[in-house]
Amino acid sequence: MGALLIRSDINLSGAQLDQFWLYHTMLRNYNTQLNLTRVHNFKNMVLKLYVDSILPANLLNLPSPLLDLGTGPGMPGIPLKIAFPHLKIILSESRQNRVAFLETVITELGLKGISVKGRAITPAFQEPVSGVITRAVERMEKTLERINGCLEEKGLAIFMKGPNCDEEIRAAEGRFSSEYELVRDQSYQIPHTPHKRRLVVFQRRSRSFGSIKAETLGKHPFHHIESEQNTIYKALKKLLTARGIKKQRAALVSGEKLVNEALRYFPEQCNGWITASDQQLPPGDAPSHLSWYRLGTSLFKTLDLFNTNTPLLRIQTKPVPDWDPREGFPAGLTVLIPFQDPENVGAVIRSAVAFGIRSVILLEECAHPFHPKAVRASGGAVFHVSFLQGPSIRTLPRDLPILALSPEGKDISQYRFPRTCAILPGLEGTGLPDDMRKTAFSIPIQKEVESLNAAAATSIVFYLWSQAEKKWGD
Image (cartoon, rainbow, N blue to C red; front, side):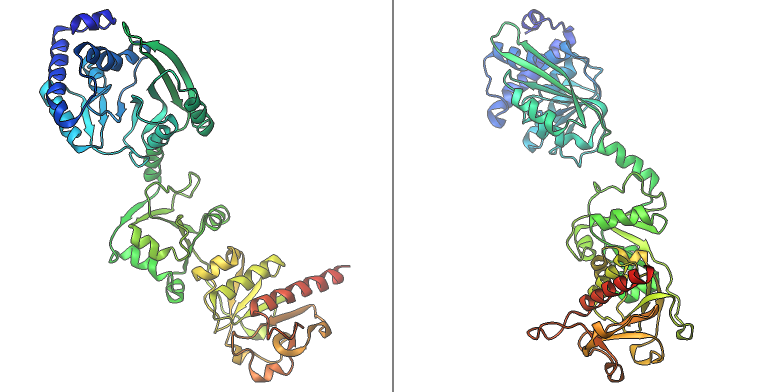
């Protein structure tokens, strides 16, 4: 064995040769049982397995710690560890019978600074490493995806490949051009054999997910919650109800777009980042007071009413002061909302904001505007409105300038908007109080349809108001 290694420009001490021989013996002894290698000829084993494993270190300064991805019977990791004892090596192997073999080899050879990870490496593996080496396990782009969590910035992804891997290189460069740079593409040959090899090395430009997560955990308070009885979880769950929202003065926001907008426009009010995965980190520019709540899958699904499978946001809401009818309405158009369906509440608020109407009075019957369904239906518009809390639709003063809507009302084209007034749609189903129906207005529609959705009808009036306002401006 020593002569074959020396001919390949690999010079080892007597102790290292003894370790190699013991490893070789164990590989042969366990091979029948575990199917560790298909190479059986002694010379071929030395050249194709051991020499091949060590050659990358003659072409490149190997980083440490170095993850040997898909090591199988321990190659290239164990030959590299024997030849370069200073390297810290992590052997990755998911097949448990081979894991036991590798642990036995490490013990019998007396190797230090080498360990076995008996699991498949995925982006969830976040132990930081300076390099990853793999011996033709899978396509390069698949490997680069796997090591997203562990390979550090400027770390090396080292691929031991056959000569015909140009298409793989192009695919990896195309997919990961912003994260990795190709820094080495070198052809070589296993000495004294016809076997051609290729060393392909990518250097990471970006930080590893693991390092970003560690920084995130240092910045944001973190809570990992698995129990339904957890106090924090119980409080979050109550935000699915109007009572809980009102008591905590907080709301849940769902959907990637709405969550990002809330963080952008109201960072000081955002205080909870809620996920089902430890890979869904708070954004780098999120406020430091934002707590991160990592929930068990079933707990998260309970809160994720719309099955977005994206992080939820807990946002503090502003108090809703009472409206005094004796003060009347501010100049312009006010909307009085009685809707009991939170989706209708959200829809009409969205339309109001779209037409520049920011005076919104919530009547006693109204569903909470920060109910998750209302927030979603509003497209986040609820956070751009300062609400007032009004009385019941039944006790509204009748002497106020109110434009009431009812399907049996007069044609709204007959209505002349005053500079100051309020629009009042009826409740879903029951509509307006009887005395208000007599002076109500309606939007003419085809007889085949009994009535418009209340939120849709209100939106049409917003448009008519906006047109009247333009004429006043002229």
